[in-house]
Image (cartoon, rainbow, N blue to C red):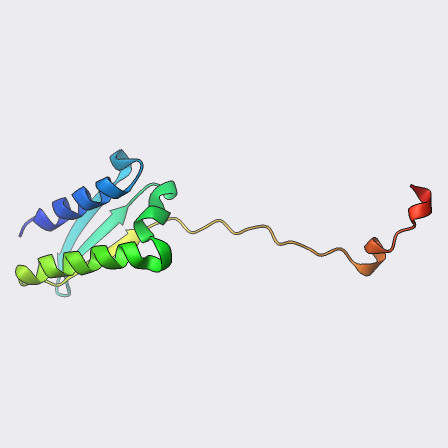
Length: 104
């Protein structure tokens, strides 16, 4: 199976993302099976994950079938930077809302 699984995953991901040149697939083998680490551009992470994780779940299922065919357990880990937190919105206080309109 050597790197056929990594090549298959690379091909699938390059077809999905907007910047295929930034897709990097790493492969490690240990006692748990094959681990495929995926790095994609931050902007493409949403496309790879999909709505409610449907896209990455389908990719994992497909790679699992490919691994079972070759008697290997295949796992995929997405190496995506954490999402930027939105700035917290602070509601104006009652005092701020009750300003004197006569001064305007």
